[in-house]
Length: 441
Ligand code: NAD
Image (cartoon, rainbow, N blue to C red; front, side, top):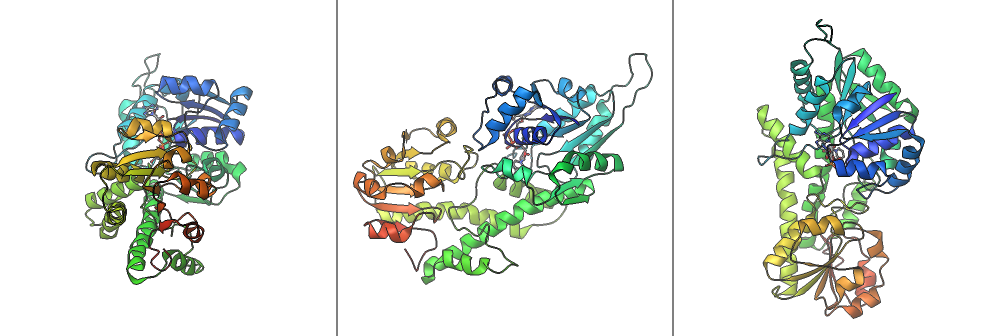
């Protein structure tokens, strides 16, 4: 099938490349010309394991092409996936400016049936807005001067991939959700995804949009729940890791998303929780649980820095090593990373920060000023008074901790992800502090 993807970021690019991989003819579009130039040359502007190899393969075979014109891309396709950003406004509501732009551009050049598919995360009822925008901007007359009203459908197909394992997640989905208002739209989407042989959940538009809201917010709730439990564990001498393990064997609960730490970050959870709270408010419902989830997440980062202050005693002029800047491992994405808040707080107290991340250094340099970026993990710990583990990269687990200890001025570790082997570090003479590990630290 001929498919256009508008927005070639983390989601759009993975979607485009994977749809080419399952046999479709894809044109990816972005209004960032530099990005399009790089993609045409087979270079991806993000770090996503496995993506570049597939991209190179399908650029060569012609299965995927690129354009910076939405009109050009949408003319060549029957189905148009919208994968542009939907950032937060100051009040937490989703900013849908890019979505409206795309809908208008597609409408202006529409000369045959099109199916517009929301891949971006958008508030419920956005589909209706897109349809209205298209109706208002359709060409009024065709070239012969006759009324020309091409048909179109709008559908929702929320994306659930995780950065860091996005290609795998796209190719092996737990389920594919499609929200449709016509049989034609359903048939097209079923055909597109047929090669994946996945469970399909078919709903109306608003329900599909709500599934995405509810899923991300539920995962954020699990994280804030276990972080609250961690706070109590710390106070009563229990180990939250064991608590999570004991809970996780219960199939009704499950072990995933029960990792205590410095809170969730990234481009999705903080913004999607905000948008869901706003949507609830607009619809007349006070979403108290989700407001608390957000508060707990913020307080967790503040608690972590207070904890460091407590143990280090004086922060001013201390050298603090940071391992990991990305919001999670296996990505270079720094959006709403917890590291930003923690580093800013400690810098504010006069600490000298030496940081290293295996993939996120380029993005971090654009977002963090006044710290030393180091070439590797060992350069970061040289002369440090403590080490903060902020992102759970495998590389850090495999580090030489004898060398690390000997390079540091004080062998003190604050493990913001409960990721390192606390026992082994203790045996090497480190003072180890995890999250909620009252019985173990
Ligand atoms: P991104 O910022 O990486 O990519 C968005 C792209 O859209 C950018 O390259 C930007 O240049 C382009 N763009 C913006 N306006 C455009 C326009 N008018 N025409 C053409 N291109 C335009 O964002 P992302 O992380 O890929 O997220 C996209 C959407 O998917 C968001 O709604 C997000 O919430 C959702 N989502 C993201 C993830 C994730 O893990 N990143 C997962 C699921 C859903």
